[in-house]
Amino acid sequence: MPIEHLFLHCNLAFHLWRSSPWGIFSVSGTGIRMWDWVKFLWNLKSMNVNTDEVFLYASIVVDKIWRVRNDKRFHYPYILPDPPTDWNPPPQDWIKIHCDAKVGGEHMCVAVVARDYLSRLMWVFTAKMDFSDALCGEAAAVCLVLEVAKEKVTNLSWWKAIQR
Image (cartoon, rainbow, N blue to C red; front, side, top):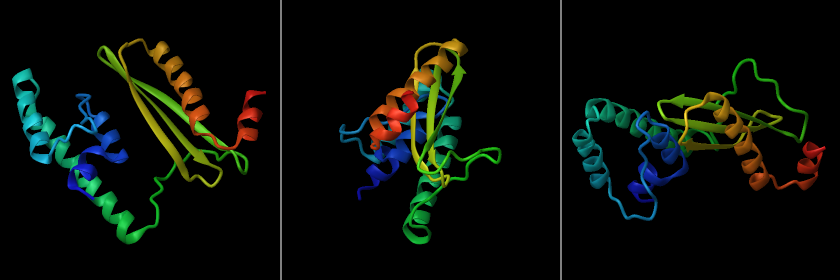
């Protein structure tokens, strides 16, 4: 696996970069190399971005990706982040979906997290929205839940049950 895929384009990398305070992320299929990415981050200085903070964040992201990769490859067949301590699992064979929105300036990030009844992580999805009203963000997060669930759900009887 090319190093660019691991640190720039894989699902984990994409979400970690996209959730940065600066909203930066690489675009798959552009042929960007690691050195190009480092130069891109460094050139953010010309846009009055504090590159010391960007490089600190980048260092943490790269370290986290590498640790997750090693854990997955050498220690665990799959990695399951622990659910919150107050989390209650859904009934057997159901999926519980949580969503939230975070407002920051003129933008917001909405996130969807789905777990099964054994608290296994089923999927995570994030999206950046170009508005800053918290109520609209919460509504957008709920709409995102429905979009993602409709796309991800493979058991149609489950989908019909939640439509009732």
